[in-house]
Length: 454
Image 1 (tube, rainbow, N blue to C red):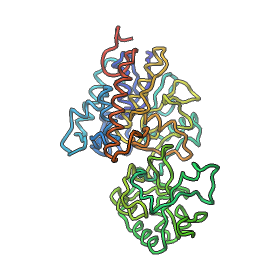
Image 2: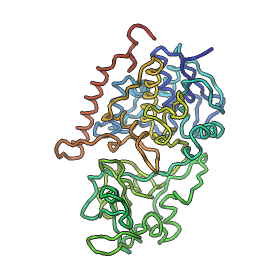
Image 3: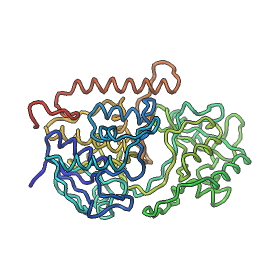
Image 4: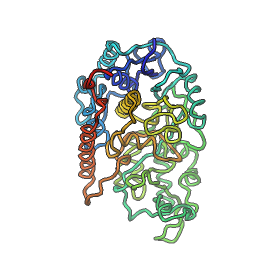
């Protein structure tokens, strides 16, 4: 039997994509290794399993993930509708009963007449197109090797090394200075891409000691973490000796503080995360410290005493492709039209973001199956921000959650941070509604398609 679409993986991205396509009237072949085999992180045979946390994170529209969730509600996300139905009290966060959530999502898939589930480990990429690969961060070795052959072995990673990101307006500019090492860069914009947080010797040594003694997130048994010298966690470097960081990511060579006219003992470099300069990442500060420890210690860095962290550092097992290098704006492999990737394998972090990525890919596939040119949500929306993430040129592409740095900033007047984020969210939802109203192909959302299924 032939199917309209084949999907590998019944996690959040694959499940959302399958249900969107099936509800729109397309037949879906869903390949899932459960119950024949599980990844080391999985503990049940239910599909769409939440294996790390029962929280879908903050709900406020002043949070980027809160905006993304609200957009998902308006776009008819099955994952979000189910999460709302099984939510449990969690203050300002959306938390769910994990087992009930997976049970209900599994039932939606198994009971849908347009979804055909085939159990068993997938070790080779099927030849059918369109094909959506949504196998997540623990993609099996055999399939990962197949993917590497398609995308290029230098475009597939097995571990991520994520540096923290801070909001630009939370940096104390009186304590930092703009400069690139040796004043490199062909333009003022190049040179201003970096901010430098200078340390004297004693504060630097205290900083290193704090990192070495900080509480760490222990590696999970299945991770088999093998650190590479080029992306060591900052605490591993700190434990090697008090001067290791000063000769590594904190080396002051080629930098002169214009206020003192001398080279600092050490520096933490901040690099622009987006063209508008709304966020900066701490260069070389990938870390396995707990989030609370990162916040406490990194706020002792000169200029970051009041830092707002948009993302914390991490180093863990994570299979993902270099999306900006190999995917187009519809999550399709440029070298193999009809082959799509969705969820964490694209470098998307988080349950909410993975489900939203599955929704996006399903919409693009639907439109192409109908002979239509794909139309993406506006770049000003959180869904548009997920597309920005996988398409924005990046020499050091790393997985990321949704942040406001992926959405064009609010430029109409000076506002406090919370008010500014709320304006960005208000604009996003308004432009999303306009986009929905202008659509004429009947693809978006859970409503039946006009004029029948197809």
